[in-house]
Amino acid sequence: MYPFIRMALGIWKARKSPQLGSFDTYVSQHRCWPWDIDMWMELNNGRTLTLYDLGRIPLAQANGLLAMVRKKRWGLTMAGVVVRYRRRIRTFERFEMRSRLLCWDDRFLYIEQSMWKKNGECANHAVYRSAVTDRSGIVPTSSVIAAMDMTGAASPEMPDWVAQWLRAEDARPWPPMQEAI
Image (tube, rainbow, N blue to C red; front, side):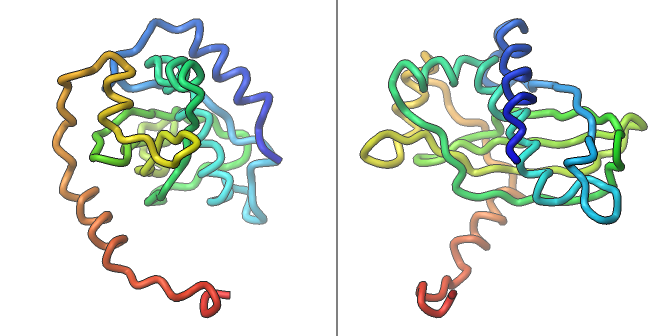
């Protein structure tokens, strides 16, 4: 089940926090609950992706993206993710999540997120390829940047490792739908 209550709490906390700059990191604290685990009593890899919503949406609240999206009646969607799992998060373990806008291109915003154990070790690290959408499809990032009053702001340079992931994604041949099923 989706963590609606945890999400509402996260958005409420983000509304109370100081406004973040476009590239500031949003830091949130979490706990691995019994409904987040797999049969090895650790954070389930699929649940990890869901829990990253608990950092990404409050980040959008804290930096003004969420208010702008609501005002314009736009939406947010995910177009891809790459995750590296490094350390286990066990049941009831507390961890810190860090979320930030990394860069953008003509169509997508790239959001970097990570979960950190209390001992300072990175448990996992993800980069999401996110898009802002309207009824016609993907809104160009130039329009998103303008709507956020960042006109003239240039995207930070895309890190090589993100560019390599994108090249690998674009080069991967996808089978026709009938073959994939």
